[in-house]
Image (cartoon, rainbow, N blue to C red; front, top):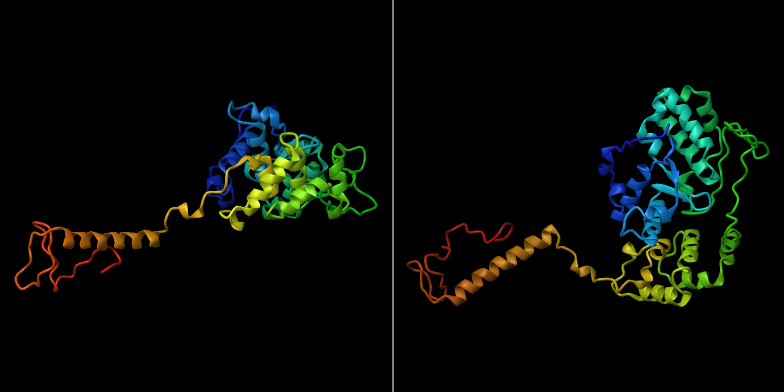
Amino acid sequence: MARDHARINIGIWGSAGFRRLSPRAQHLYFVLVTSPSLSYCGVADWRPKRLAALSEEWTLGQVEAAAAELQEQRVVFFDDDTEEAFVRKWMKHDGLIGQERMAVSVASAYAATSSIRLRGLIVHELRSLREAQPQLRGWGKSKLLEVLDEPSIDPHEEPGQGQAELQLGANQSSDEVELGPNQTSPTPAPAPATNSSSLLRAENGAGSYPEAFEEFWQAYPKKADKRAALRAWERALKRADREQILAGAVRYAADPNREDEFTKNAATWLNADAWLNPPEPPRGGRPPSRAESRIQGNLAAVEAVRRMTEGDTHDTRRDGEAPGLHWGAGRPAPHPGDNHRLAPGFG
């Protein structure tokens, strides 16, 4: 039965990880979880061009940049080859495993997932959920138990994009793999993508990346998630020439306002066409901290007193006060015995 609504836990706004995402990444997340194609195990169709068409001002590059960010933060995983996206915590928050009938639907949705990589991630999330909530009624369904014994992939060991080594189920060995529900042949070992010759070379070791990409990699200031960067590089070459991208990377690395803490991963930078960006703005333009604001307020108060004492010749001194301090009309100068504070935290 097709879904006609989507459940979104409002507690998501209490997640520090989700709030660290950029608005475009958060938007793509909500687009995916409200997609009519989202299955009961959290897998949705991944067709960036179609998603870009959902908004007049959304471009393909922006969609891909948002996807790269979601994957870097391990919120959503994507398989470009099978055109599938897996929302990692969907099964946990949707509460389907607590219902026996829906637990069977989760197992069926797993069987319908094409990506070996995403299937492994689904199994890992189900195992983690059973460990955390063993009382859920759905664990008693044999179809779901068969899924739990399938090979798994730990998302924390995932190298961004590409394939990762599968962990065998409890009753599996490297020589014999048990069949899962609705399978007629053993689950094959993960294989490199076959639609990218350069990605095949990347599987063989760090030294086998394409020479042009290696030149970019050496110039780029942050060395993280190299395989994801390679895929983003190949897509970027369809939108710009190599020299333009390389020149942008060199400028970004040499930018005096770039800080290591805020330097983007190469895949994010490439997906966003960031070689077209202007230089980074100075970080000094950030809002002052609370302590800095208090100090500035105190200095402003002192300056106001100085101007009043020097700029007004009307003498409103109290009896016995020394000349030289001239205060505005109707505003007496502080008496030595007064407990006068110029500003909070000062005086």
